[in-house]
Amino acid sequence: MPHDRDHRDKPGGDNSVGAIVARLSALHPKRIDLSLERVERLLAALGHPERNLPPVIHVAGTNGKGSTIAFMRAILEAAGKRVHVYTSPHLVRYNERFRLAGRLATDAELAQVLEECERANGDAPITAFEITTAAGFLLFARHPGDVLLLEVGLGGRLDATNVVERPLASVITPISIDHVDFLGPTLDKIAVEKAGIIKRGVPVFIGAQPREALETLERQAEKMRAPLKLAGQDWTSTEERGRLVYQDESGLLDLPAPKLPGRHQFENAGIAIAVLRHLSGLAVPAAAYETGLSRADWPARMQRIGTGKLLDLLPPGSELWIDGGHNPDGGRAVAAALADLEERVSRPLVMVSGMLATKDSTGFLRNFVGLARELIAVNVAGADKPLPADQLADEARAIGLPATTSNSVEQALANVGARGLSIPPRVLIGGSLYLAGEALRLNGTPPL
Image (cartoon, rainbow, N blue to C red; front, side):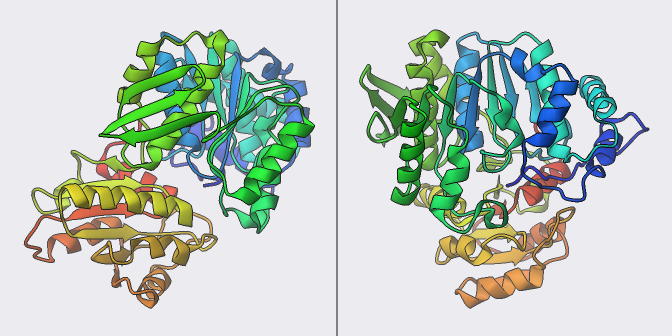
């Protein structure tokens, strides 16, 4: 998902976070315009806060960035570290993008730095993501921290986060086809953009990759003389008897399964462990890995909803899950997680889905043919270029996935309840982070 998430805040005045973000969003005609020139100009006007950050671990990739960051954060916090985190997009509140040593930035803190950036920038063209990245750097530079986990918004080479000259480490999670309008239509072109975060002499950790992408990343690491660590070569992370077994040249860790569900999370956790194990300066004790895996939290990634307004619309005993995966590889990971759930406890699976017109919706849905009983398509509110629900339903039916449409998420869930299923269903709301965020808002369970 790109960093052009529209804000959900309701402006309460000219200086509210929502009002400021709305003004900033009007400074550039495009939501996304990849460049470093504008953010570099603003950071210079602000006194270069990016040069005063805690040690940075910079994370790019197509899938798994957020989960890998969630594991690193949980492990580092279990080790007693003060961890700042910058991620995008947000799901419900803009504040979710800025985590300061274990808590979200307050409205007052965020409004203050956004106003500072607004004054320093004036009316000069700049994208909302660029100016909010600068605001984040102000926050992170001013609050004591031991580590900053910095997520790329889109791509890497020209992403606003790529102004950090010498991070502690660069991390590239699995790459797949996504955001082709901005990054290119092939894996090698996309990999070139992701490889742009590799810095001279800075260790780079690379998750499992298609061969075409891996070759591009390896060439760039060699060019930059960046020490290279590869999943499957320098470390392995596998599921064995319900536990995570991690191994590298320093030895073996027998750990609990990650709290985040899905087979793919064993790989994401492995990347996180590899980074922290190889960066000796962080001094993470062995016990922190076990505690961190058990505590890691990342909303809207195979998140089970235990209470709330949406769950109450379903028959008693139903399961409700939310996931923001929106490309074919993301859908493959979600489908595998649901298949594992089906193997353990069989239930009819119903999908409530909405997607953007810019995504490979058919490629995403193919993963669920033969697994889902039906799909209920809904429109994605508040997003640029949403795919009409009736078109998504037509695409689903064309590949053999029974589908209907509904006017809203609430109506879709009420319709599931009216099906009269003999077994309480398992329901997945997914296909878009916009939709996932809207579902969390409607349910009354926003990220904390």
